[in-house]
Structures are given as structure tokens and as C-alpha cells.
Length: 112
Image 1 (cartoon, one colour):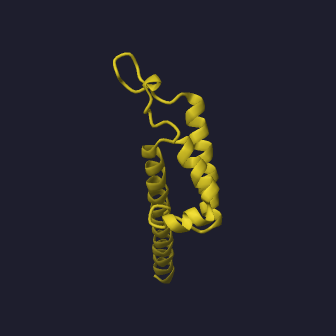
Image 2: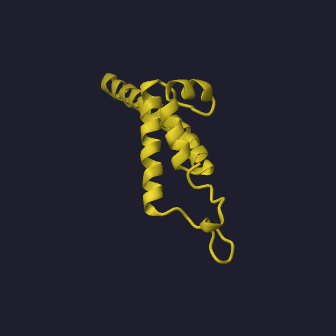
Image 3: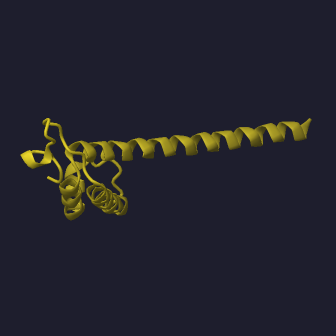
């Protein structure tokens, strides 16, 4: 995997782990974006629940993503994708409900 920090060369003199550098992070984010674009094209929101389908439809992209990012980042980004999708759906639902309420109030005022 990308940076699992398993080798001794990835550790500081006191045994701590070295954080990924800017290039590694950029490579991770780019591979994540390519993977998520493939998921979007395949109408897959949750690649954790639908792992088999995601791997079947986006195998090359998920392999690159998992290779470029640490396991914890992969899991985090997959969970974040689902959370943001649900958040956006909730916001849209609230906007529609608010618009309907405003229209109803305007109709009541107009009839008075």
C-alpha cells in the first residue's frame, strides 16, 4: 500500500512515523478523485457497502486509490463521501420543504 509506514526508513529517530509529504498527499487526492468519478459514473454512492460492485466496475481506480493512500485515509474518504451525499440530500429536502412553506404562506396572505 501507499504509505503504511512499515519500513524503518519511514520513522523518525525517536520511532515516530513520518507524515506523508505534499507529493504523496496530492497523489492520494488525485487517485481518490478518479475513483470517485468512476463511482459517480457507475451510480455507486457507498463503496464500503457496495465493495464488490465498486471493485468490479472501478477495479483499476480503486487499486490506484488504495495504493496511493493509507488505509485510514481510504476508509475516511469513503465514509466522508457517503456523509456528504446524505448531507446534500438533506439540505435539498429542507430547501424544498421551505419553498413549499413559503409558497403556502404567500397563498394564505394573498387570500386574506
